[in-house]
Image: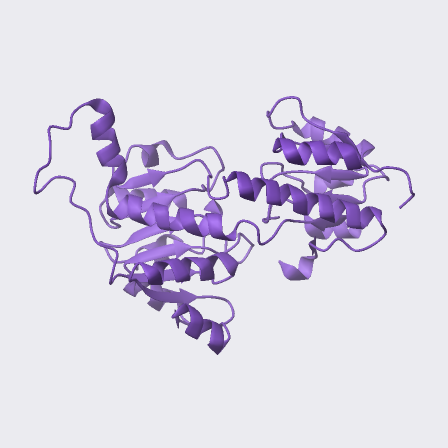
Length: 328
């Protein structure tokens, strides 16, 4: 790259310390409001910038990448997941892609446990009763939930976040099980106290709680499809803080409505913000607006990783968090 300051375009508002540091280091164009860029805005930005900083709601597909200008050499994603970016097409065009792994682990694992407790202990129903003024005092049979200690937790995807969930669940007295495309090393299994299941079907059929912690890839799309959801015990609970596309949301909604699955805690959805309206109506479902990484600490650390990736690239080196198709 030439020595002049890089032209950087950011697609959404970022935490103030991140935006301030970007202004100090780069020729950066920030958003004045937090509205998502239109496809036309994204195309224009990719035609004029050296570096694009998108977020997960920006779909950077082959068509957009094909319109990119000659200057665009790095897509420095603000977030760990890159399923919204056509990494292969970017590579073919000589455009590097980077992400921000590792900084969301603890916050997402915390939210996974929060959703488990919210569903099993019926927290939203208690909150609604208090907010409506309907609560008339303690009763021996009111708002009875279930204890999570002693329950079997199945973790689908045993990467950083899955392992962090395992540690937390063990502290709550849960029995931890997992399915992963590759079995963990024995020392990690021992450290997490997790039991490996080669067959996802067999694990799903025996769990009391199922936590989705795998990324969205072509091989994980609808991994929890209607057939596999029907394997779950009627008293089981499913929690997803990973990617909505991993679950067939319509099939899940039907089974929750029919009482074939006891409950669900969801932070992500198959069609982004377009949530199945029937899902919203169910009392045995806790829905959150993609809050898994929503801590000030995580969002600033994500920005710091973006800056390091851009600065390393500007200095003529490979971004430390470069993503290549073979990783996906």
